[in-house]
Length: 338
Ligand code: WQD
Image (cartoon, rainbow, N blue to C red):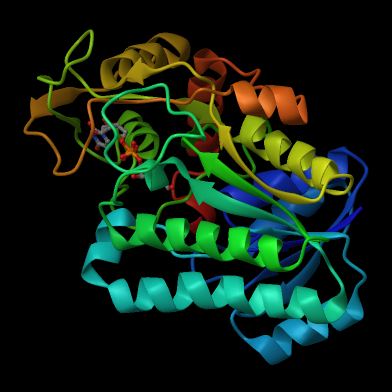
């Protein structure tokens, strides 16, 4: 297969690129590098031993995207490109809806013109909304999203479901990620947040490296075993392999499928902190502080459908996630800005 990765220089996209090449496929990355570093490309060439085909373009730029589709014969598209900071989306809804919807609509128009009929979409578990009961199943009716980022993911799902209804020879996988962490075993690629990390694991790794003084644990009065928030952490390499399985599935199936990509195991914040300290033999000082607005008690996947439909399940352990996250941080104290 030859796959176009929109936003392929990002955290999930770069790891998916590696797994596609490992599986014997060809891949082309298009990225405007708004939230990614060009240094990823040389790292990908080192990991795969092959040159990377990279197009520096904005996925919402129709003329640029038409030229890319004209230059290649793609079998499928994996659509990662989009803004992804929950808090920022609340402050900048216009930019989030403009960017996250335009990229999808432009890709669909270019695919239709080029006769490309398979698309995998990078969705998110946040589209379920503030559902109190986990595990979360794809058939559940979502509640209202709680921020423009999550709404943009939900609206993109709606767009792609309607496109597949209108064009029955299309196939689409809407992959609902839970909490991706970890990094490629080489330590050459990983999560590279700009500024203060919003997410737990990059904050932990920066505390462990001494870049930050301590971790603030957002509340320990949740309805969970140790009172701290429970989430479904999934190794980014497992997540990437789920995208490969989804692409291969779409080539022989029509229609749209919503699929959770999670482990089905919930770990608390303190579970992660303790595992990280144990596996890496490095202290992570922390303090319990007040809850973060909008956080849920517990949120984890029912991963059954991915196993049944795609023959995929997460295989890496929490220890793997902690070890690989630390290796990336240790080898790249300032991410790709070193
Ligand atoms: C995990 C747990 C926090 C930071 C977010 C996005 C979601 C998705 C995944 C894109 C929670 C606690 C965190 C910290 C803490 N991204 N925490 N101190 O909120 O589950 O999901 O990332 O799709 O859209 O919402 O992930 O890593 O922010 O938080 O105590 O400094 O860690 O309260 O319980 P979250 P997270």
